[in-house]
Image 1 (cartoon, one colour):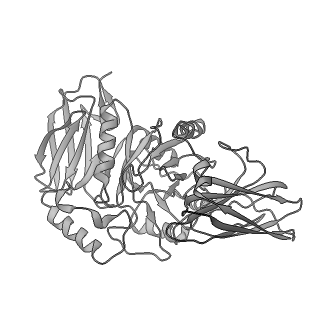
Image 2 (cartoon, one colour):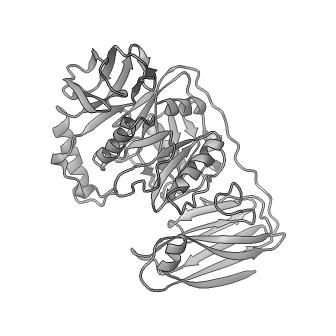
Image 3 (cartoon, one colour):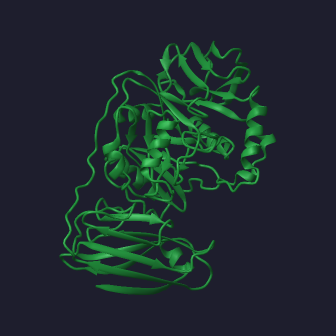
Length: 468
């Protein structure tokens, strides 16, 4: 059984609701649904694609989601035993389903769209959903990971297997795969999580007004936000399920334009430092100075290509989040992200930056601080800068590759954190960046960066909070 549904849509429809629903009936006994979207795709006309089954109760729902591919695909299938990446296989519930179109960009005038739907009832088995595993490496220490990357379950070209190989190549201990608005990548990553490489449950809530990562939640989280205040609904959905919420890349070209939610983390560093990250850093600094407690994390936002790429400046784990864990496990990673017991560095082999105050680690709170202790490796000739709510309050040259330094912390206001700023390494890093942008098509509007005007950070610590 097949049908084609046609419609005309306009910017008025987009203004009324960026999500446009096309209902269709699915009879009992259906084992596979195929859907194809046709529209005049262009730079100014991009329509996202997804589907919900009859259990959907409208935003915000906990049930009924069956898949999302954004603008990366114009067709998909869902069957009882398999599904297109980004979509959820399993029982085909009879009743009214809804194709959901996301109006990311629409041109002036009418846009003609058509959706072709084919329904099949051939006998098929019902494949189970992936089961989460709980690997543990029972050893305390500093562990490295990337908290933001993508596979072909959303808009990357690479399979989960290729991303897995890239993480091992980079020497990572943990990885959060945050495909856009879907959790179907767990078909691969749940059974493959191991003590060698722990996979952290993640999903990127992706809208036209901002992106946020959800960590540590089994279920899919409804992304269909249409109002500035829906950011608070998002927080409730995540926290009710015991997860963490992180605001992603709050900088051009995809800043956070909703109301500020009760976020646990902020992605302060995304991709190469020169991809506008000083803007995200300043917004985090302002939030800390206002009295908020938000842990800093970093993520490459790497969209895995179809083949494994060699190590380089725009691949996985640039930057790397480094966390102190009592053991390597997903629960330990999530707990350290929440408290901020760690730092961000430029790469898996980037400088280390460990800050304590009176022996208490990053993420702690101290009422009356006395002395700060900083341990740095791999940054000789660069500068250490320390910052409180008023801004930079001191700096010192990093004299050796393995360097320790103390300074008074008694006058710090609200918090104390540190940065490694490129000095001796600045010329090298600048030359590498210029070579990177030469003759290439790059993301994040990197060609527009004025290198001469920017301070280059090589590592950022989380704060130690001060006061009662």
